[in-house]
Picture: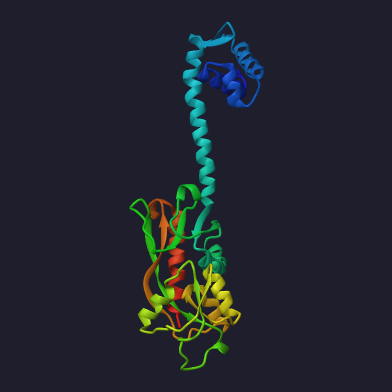
Length: 292
């Protein structure tokens, strides 16, 4: 026996579920007539009527109810399987949310190594900081400094300590020079960074002029351009320190905060998240070991 086309069974199933050709047509984005024709063709193919048609309304008869008991679960299972296949195909992409300056100055330059290590895994980068709504953002993981609260629904793994220190162009610094009286570049995204560093370094600069920029990457670019001295995370200026564009006359100190990788579920439940955690932790350790 040759079965009718799958489309006819699909139209029948939606019509049976809604008990209305009109509602079925809306769900299927077709006309009422198209649904009626498909159902009629199915009835003619199997030689059995499936609906009672009364006063422009339709009602499943016993044969229709029997068929729907099979086609209803079948199409539900088919939809679930297709969704699972599509979801698994997306498993080859990991969506990473990262603070903008760290993303720009540290993460992106290291992505060639990530792709070489995991050639079958693509990375989609979202530049964002602070608290994260994983459901709304679509991120799989988020790299954040632990300067805000997250509850137990967030799974966090520490990936490195934060190190901060002043940076400037070599020509702007003379051995033995003091910071007091110099213009100092501040970032609005981390307004207490200078105060924290000075407290940890037992230094002060009460006469210094405060110049504010919106983001750390603007402070760094201003420092590279010779526009005075900026406080910075060591992760943000490694390339500039290596090239000699910037120097860190006082070195860097731990400020007590840490960078963490956050996830809405345990890392062990996702192979791609575990892979990224292992890779970024190793890269962070390499970076920290090279602190001047």
